[in-house]
Amino acid sequence: MRRTLLTAVTVTAAALALSSCGTTEPAADSAEKSSEAITVTDSSGAKVKLDGPATKVVATEWNVVESLVSLGVDPVGVADPKGYDTWDSSVPLKNDPKDIGTRGEPSMDTVAALSPDLIVATTDLPASAVKQLKKIAPVLSVKSADGTGQIDRMLGNVDMIAKATGTTDKAEALREDFEAKVDEGKKAIADAGLDGTDFAFADGYVASNQVTLRPYTDISLIGEVNTAIGLKNAWTVKGDESYGLGSTDVEGLTDLPKDTRFAYIGNDEDDGATPFTGALKKNAVWKSLPFVKAGDVHRLDDGIWMFGGPGSMSAYIDAVVETLTK
Image (cartoon, rainbow, N blue to C red; front, side, top):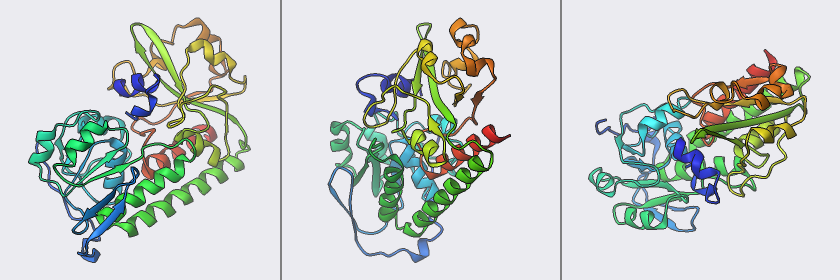
């Protein structure tokens, strides 16, 4: 997470977010899968050809790991599975996949030893790494983020992975469940008289005793979900074009409306990733903020991956609704 945070607040924000060998269990609907060849056009425009639905899959980024698990496909190899367990417990791993290295630098030897029939990567992975992975197995590259439509991108990625793994029925169910969750959250917010409430979501980290905060603007995935359930994004800072993530310090919080409800996700297992209960606790500017004084600072449930799929975003909606309406 430290690497992800540091990367996202630089000009290379789009590069974000950014045990023993496990076995791949057949998806629940494997009996219904077709053995016919499959061709999927991925986010890079490449046509990925498979002899049949992929079952022995390696994943290089946490968002695609979540998609696979949600679709009932347990990946045999995962980049930094320990980190995934820490930051994405909303959709936990059901097996014990092989650790293939970091999300930015997977071990080619480890991946090759798994003999996968598909590698699911993201367009954030360096082209040189993708080129090497393609020598091992077909690579399906998905675009992790799209500031012009994050929710559509998230659901489209699930559909793409589902086509490659023969789990399109599950993808449709995931879409329907997520849309129902959005409607449920929107109704709960409206019923509580909170429709249009100024809401600011952020995370942050501490490096060299300096606190950096990361606003999730209205074009981030979290921002789109907040808008979908009827909340108004209170941030005025601009985020990067891909992830919609901004960067500010504690003084930048003084620009938020006085009646803002503020929320964040942290993780005590990741040192320095929860400054709101640590480094800022005695900060004079932080303590002077109207929403801090009013007690409108809320830590949402740990383990909701802010760049995840329908499972994470459904858990996020539940956490926000519970926090604002309790």
